[in-house]
Image (cartoon, rainbow, N blue to C red; front, side, top):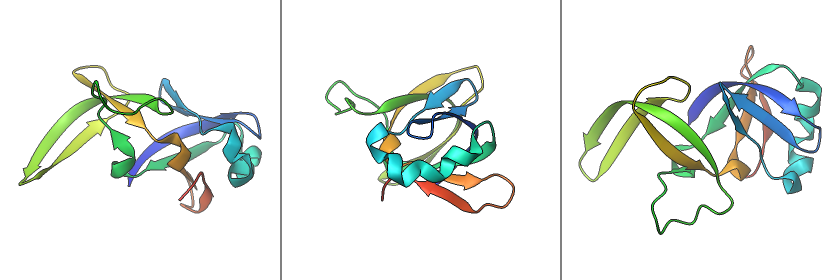
Length: 121
């Protein structure tokens, strides 16, 4: 799972996580799963997104309901039929754009690591 420091904003029914200068917001329809974030407005949290929920958009990829995250590529590891890409999402330099399945974000307390909310499974 990729983990990012973020700040929670928005409303109880529509939280917004600010990851550096970028924002990710789960769909409002997931409000019940995200209610526990309401008490963390303005707080620092950790946002988690699994690698399989990050997609490099191509002309044919379905990204209609996905938000974008721009990141700097720091390292690419070739592992046969797969590649691991290491990146930092808030620095300037060479960039890549990912489509994020925001309906699958995970939120954790930045101090204790305790799970606060999970948008969906």
